[in-house]
Image 1 (cartoon, rainbow, N blue to C red):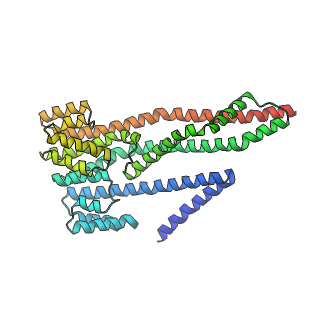
Image 2 (cartoon, helix red, strand yellow):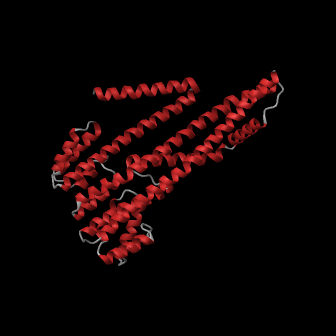
Image 3 (tube, helix red, strand yellow):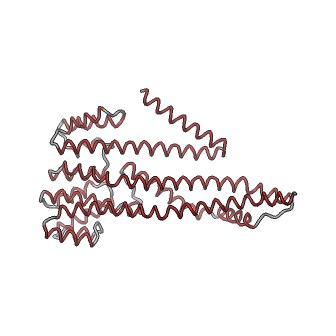
Length: 385
């Protein structure tokens, strides 16, 4: 109780101080935006902490399954070190496991402990008799995927904060400073500098046709929050751009699930059916159902995956060659890791390339505002002297 109370007081005091500074410096509008930012930061921190605890639970389950230990005592040990909702859910999971419920069904009845993508892989591992390997695949994918995405998300958050602050300052300058400058120069019979006139004309034009820019701003905000929500919780919204960026991650999960079946020398059709039923992304489920229909009609699984856009032609060639050589499971795992690495590196390279240009664009915008609102003061002082 004291730990929880201390955290609440610390967060509340910090947020109150931040909102007070915003109110004193920029008024009630900035306080409202500051409150929204504080709530966002707190939510992201809580979700991030929850994601780390999910990873710890998966690691515990993977160690217990690999050593052929009962899973319920391991979950109980995890629950004893957790408080709140996570501890309650972990104890419920342990109780379900002790009652004879399988791990995938127990996780399904206790949502929030493991991401839905991980549950799909665990279910395939349970059905193929490779539960320990499935848990280790989930843990290794998290270790490969999380560090780079943390760096990417940090830069995106920083850039988003800069854009938000720039919009706040620009709105304040347009609504409060620009009209006062115009009145002062009209009273003294002076003409505003050309740079100031250009800046004011541009801002007035943007204010007049704001409805044309609003959809793009709304799309950017939705994309940003969907990306944050997906990373923190593992749950994805059906936004086209976000889904397309994460398609390689879906392919990696599917290939790892098929690798579990390939290692046990079993047919792929039951595992494809399981993924088509339990995979959390609706668009991927539709594609997997189409693949399942192709396989039942006699088409090879790898050609069907390529036909439905889940793998690329180069991956199809690799799988065909690996099938002939007898190392299909290895090829499936390598291609799954390759999909994750390529997506991570492409996103990181894109952020590293676009980040300096975005900073330069924001710097140029700030310079224009500073020059356009500082030159009138110099001109007015010269006129009065």
